[in-house]
Amino acid sequence: MCGITGWVDFQRDLRNCTTLLEKMNETLEARGPDAEGKWVEDHVALGHRRLIVIDPEGGTQPMEKKLADRTYVITYNGELYNMDELRLKLQSLGHRLRTRSDTELILTAYIQWGMECPRHLNGIFAFAIWDEAEQRLFAARDRIGVKPFFYSQVGGSFLFASEVKALLAHPDIEPVIGEEGLAEILVMGPARTPGVGVFRDIKELRPGHMLSFDRDGLRIHPYWELVSVHHTDDLETTAAKVRELFEDAVKRQLVSDVPIGTMLSGGLDSSAISACAAKTFSEEGRGQLSTFSVDYADNDKHFHVNEFQPNSDAPWVQLMADAIKSDHHVVMLDNEELIENLIQAMIARDFPGMADIDASLYLFSREIKKKMTVVLSGECADEVFGGYPWFHREEMINADTFPWSRLVDKRIPFISPEIVQRIQPLSYVESRYQEALAEVPRLSEESATEARMREMFYLNLTRWMPTLLDRKDRMSMAFGLEVRVPFCDHHLVEYVWNIPWSMKSLGNREKGLLRYALKGLLPPEIIERKKSPYPKTHHPVYLRTMQQRVLQLTEDAQEPMFQLLDRQAVRQFAEQDLNRTHLPWFGQLMNVPALLAYWLQLNEWLKRYRVKVDI
Image (cartoon, rainbow, N blue to C red; front, side, top):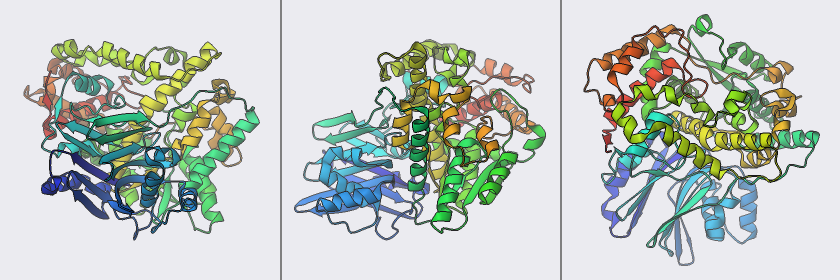
């Protein structure tokens, strides 16, 4: 993975502005610790930070390619998983390739197919190509949105970057938020509405979209969308196809010129990836697979079963590691260190996020990076196959809102009355929910139950999953660790999208079809294990510390978060005995300690990013 930046301005000679490009590039240092580069000419400047994964010698960027009298330049972040097929296709069309890198493949694909090139790519990517003859910048983002792409159009300038912090490093972009940004942070957060960059002048290129910028302005179009068709395969054919697509995705994503391993929680998803990877390693003579799990000091003493977390991971991790004979590493996190890295996790994400869930992945990634450069992870199986409680509980299915934000009304009393009046929280959430439903590709002659479940899957794939992909990208890339997610393979997503809910929920189990498809690959105990989400700390010191720190903030009315929050309401809440208070205010893991931590992150975000509230 890498970091990309760029700037196009047809009224300015950017050869005099290289210092600004370098400043933007420097903010992405962790994304590309191995090399950096820039390409500047007249009205365009492209920057790149490189993490070497494939072709250390030939993949230097920005990469320039000349054909006849035409010049093309690319800056690219990502990995292609159809390199061999694409290389053969391009060579058959007469193209000569001088490197093994996927960077050159994408640039050559653009030369061959122009703005149709993203349709020929299988992988995770965000890239921008300067077409000198056309005086046009062309950019695209992968179908699922694994790799980030933010942009800003201010005056005559068009700027883009892998992360918001790089855009904010440019003096023309101010850290201003208006009513929309406030609603995103205070009501939707830590999720974000697709396309919204929170700051007034920043937007996000949506997954599966491409853009072009030239002297006529900016144009954005989708190149990929989910398509609903009737599923005609029977159960056995469907399960076999799911298994085939899954194993193909894992094998393709194991290609690397640097050490590669897997994250292993002992759950169905990561275990399946690890088992498939171990099998591939054995078949290809690549030695022993390295696997990694995370836990917290003293968590065994303080773990409490609840509706979302039925058991701890440790015994299941060991069972799986023994079964595949992996070289397993347990990363044990200290709660004090977790607390002290809440702010670093926020900075990595550029926004208040999933609190300790982010910070733990941040520290987990740091430790994995000491041994690996690339790992595969089980994210997104729950969104693709229906693993979350809200796919199975009637009150959540019928909530008529985003199922992870059913309790948004519980957040409103903490927001200052003036801000509530301006952003209208419930109306904002309702409008975003209806906006999402309007996008769902409907299928005729579908039962009411199947139609509602199609809506649920669409909400999860396009509104919930990006939150987790955002987290995965930012926390891992903070240390130059590339994380690949096989369950996001678009061929798998497209096929499973049209499998009816009655088949996906086989046996009335979460991910029932996936469990059936994976039989024979995993131990029966793993196949039958009830879903348990990403592990989190249960140590009481975490909650106590969050309470203490929030209470300290309430002692000073000038703390910036009290521009937005009701100081008295926050104080009264933090003073309570919260040990048994159950308030899953966002998703299945964000409870009371995370709410307090979110406020801490919010306050520090307002300070560090010098956020200006303009309503």
